[in-house]
Length: 270
Image 1: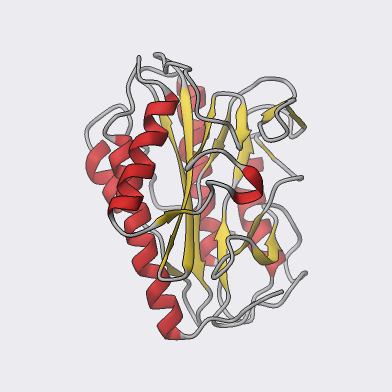
Image 2: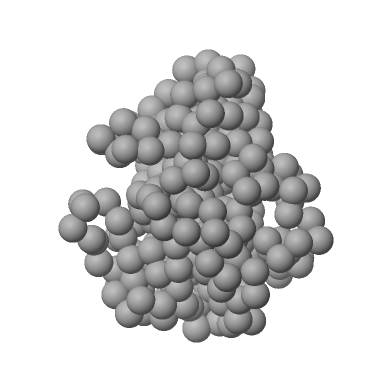
């Protein structure tokens, strides 16, 4: 089902998004070689609960943690574990917060120390593609316009978009309608209406688009084991310009002038 939100409901979702953004920043402060991904999960859950929220992911379809932590070739849904981050890794942190009855959902991918320029470019361009998609999340456009904007931006660099995993509506439920693919044709799909709230989340591979699921039933990785990047915002559809309800502000304050910083320049959107 697709549920349109009132302005009052969207304001509540923005409050949830602020807590989520600050939880991401608390995790970002601790990302470094030698830290375990399980420790990052502990930090996130503690911050969310201390600030009146509930980790949206923990227990969702029996997922065991507050964070989906996906390293290197893992696309999404990786479990926190005793794995220690090392120089040259990339790590995607996907998190959700339920607060005042509403969920927010966002993700960010970080480089650990020195990584190749090829992989850093993948992160930069995937983050750019998120904003390409968001620009199309306005009343009167269609879902296909969002997917086309993401796909056309990353494919011009030779990257591939995962087909089996998509964004989604978000609100009182973590996953609502409509689905929001990161590929598509302009002018096709569900028509966007003011009050829709969408989790737009490009998942972009350096190599082939094909993925496989690991035996744990959750972890998704690239079939060729090349790196994958993932960035996500929760966004309200508006007339004229979409409204971003989550935030990277606190992440960017923490990572400024460090190797974790993923800076994007202005993007020309087709």
